[in-house]
Length: 516
Image 1 (cartoon, helix red, strand yellow):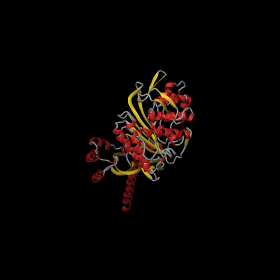
Image 2 (cartoon, rainbow, N blue to C red):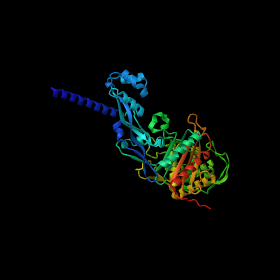
Image 3 (tube, rainbow, N blue to C red):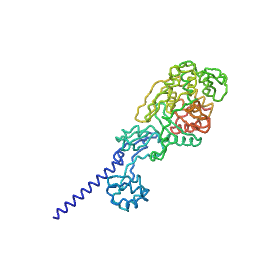
Image 4 (cartoon, one colour):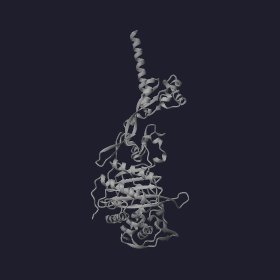
């Protein structure tokens, strides 16, 4: 008889334990623990190639309920509501559900909450650990990393933006993804662009740094950014990556592309001259220089130095419509760069691609109006000039091999355009470094009025520069959308100088500028 009672008790205990572990397994499944435990890391690096975790899995305590095990929902809600931060009526409603086997009450619970719940020893209330995706440096490279979340179609955690989305299958399988991003350059770029946006009241800002020889992205920073650990607290528009998803008319920063086309076809040289009268009329439309001045007889190098709109038009007309459009496309405009980030846009060249393209459309395109590009396309095009005329595919995945997309211009052409840009930097003396030769170009572009046509009294500022010219190690793009000052020379140009000085010091790049 005693043996029979013991057997029944043991059987009941086994059933009870079995139900507990079944319920716990179900609960952990519902909070996405299994898939998150094995999710691979996202890694960045430093200049020595040392791996630095950007996104990892980290356990946090959670408090959850199994409502079907709760006998008195009202009493338990009364005891718990203040501790858990719930309204008493809402908590009672959540707990009073005999059919429910799981209800999350608190994620990432505090030590105080855990201690108080443990003291209460309430039936049907459990404390466990759940792995969360943790972003080690919070907002650093947030548009690159993206984040993991839950969507309606997919109950388990899933990458919804950035690398988390682009490499969902790889990461879900437990494999790490190592990026080309350099933590120190990224940190410098992040701090700089946040400061610029704040200082000049800009809507958004972007900095990209790329290795022109390999296409490796060393930094990609946007403002405003977000904290992937608490992404729900950020407005949805902050998740758009301006570097790859925002189109804009680049303005005068496009002029080196125009010069490269003309020089490469042999119709102009840096010393070719023309007489600038300050304005041009094409197809009944008037084109003026940004400074409203007539510069007289000037060279193509002077056009870059003084950013003369009519000079860019002269170069494009000499090149010819077909050849001009051909070179614009060869530089990668109008096509995706195929960088390993989701939802990249291809830009818009419809103004100059159409069959009956007008002279005025070619003219305005020559100085960066009427065509829409992305920042990643702009910096990619400039890497071709820095890299002796070879366009490299930009990449952010360190495992992706270096790939030359195409030869855009001859090496001699690239050298001449770089020297024209160097002359512009030295004459202005705002972006110039004391010991390193730097090539660069500004762009101050009016923003197209998409509602009423024409242009707003608002501007985008861009500066792209690279160096050292004798052996380029970096290309950097800085862009501000709608700053509260007019000219890029006052905003992104001095910032570029600071960034360039940081990079040459960080890499200990030998000087290449002759000194007296």
